[in-house]
Amino acid sequence: MMFSRSFAAILLSLCWLTPWVHADDEASVPAPGVWPIERLKTEVPAYRIENPSSKIQSLIYAGEKYDGHATEVFAFYASPTTLGIGEKDETYPGIVLIHGGGGTAFADWVWMWANRGYAAIAMDLGGRRPPPPEFDESGKLKPHVGHKRETRVRLVQGGPADGHNEKFDSIGGTIDDDWPYHAAANVIRAHTLIRSFPDIDSERTAVTGISWGGYTTCLAASLDDRFKAAVPVYGCGFLHEGESVQKPSIDRLGDRRDAWVAAYDPGSLLHKCTVPMLWVNGTHDIHYVLDSYAKSYSEVQGPRTLRIEPRMPHGHQAGWNPPEIQIFVDSLLKNTTPLPTVGQMHVSDNGTVTLPFQSTTKITQARLHYTTETGLRSKRKWKHIQGVIADGEIMAKGLPAEANTWLVTLTDDRGALVSSEVGLR
Image 1: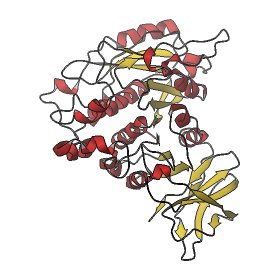
Image 2: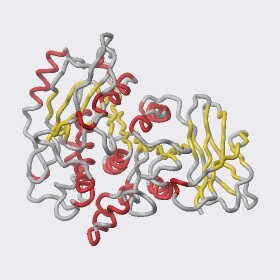
Image 3: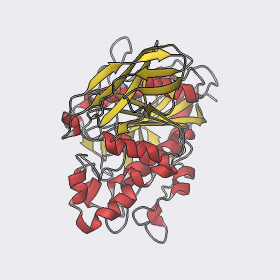
Image 4: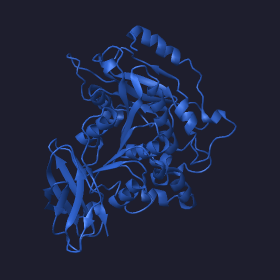
């Protein structure tokens, strides 16, 4: 059902009068690792829209309590309806967009997905708000000034900041000052909120996040089974192992280390995840390293697709640009042509690697990537061997016996890349 902007503004302002309800209003505050999932999934948070006539709306919704105080979360929201390109009575799939470290709610990310036919929400998970978006004379969005950190301001009722102390050192006692709890809970609250909007098909929703947002995507998709697709970019679990740059911060927790891992490392939750996932990462990422990455995607119970790109750069734009993300989400929410799927990779004694695949699109390139070097994974040099594309199988000869890490990539005639699982020894 579609509403006029004036009626929508009245309706949305009435929603803001709804009493805010929080976990802390109960008899006790949950301990770390205890998630009030049913409440988060069923209780629509109070909200207000500051500029209901804008193409990209500035929305504030009630967050979880922080040190006993009510909080609010800032978000940008846009859909074909707000852009003025929607059809009467049409509903759209929804997507939740989670920024990474140093990020915020990005208007251009929301704009991109709204123009793809989605109702998109991107929130700031550090208790701040960026400046409003600006448009040129033709109505096109200008580059969002919110990419500059100095343009953001602290909300009067903002939740915890997203610094290292809030992410790690807050562990102990109750959850209400733990950033990982607030991040995942406020993502689920945003999901519950947009599912209540009249122009969204509540049964077609997805989530994607970048870096720390990918980490939070892993948490949210493991806790909230209402998503029909999830795309963690870079982010994974098992951060307390291997070469992750987060490991020293976790180790410094001392006798609180195990509590943080049990409560907030995605590796402790991913075994609950049944949501179909596309895992996007690079071979040389220093934040989310391949061995921890392989452990993470191996934990999930739902279907998984991998896109591990040699030397993929790390960043927000680099993280939301891969076309495979839209192809994957569209295939599940709009029933469009899916990405190719691959089976179990096999390595023979003579170094021949074979990989079965299925694809409704033509595979135009296949490569076996590998490294024989040791030392930091982010510093190792990789080589590749061209693969032979046969009927339903990729074959590449010559994997050296001393190779310690390898994978196969396939590219189809759309330019979409998928990969095998990572081989490790």
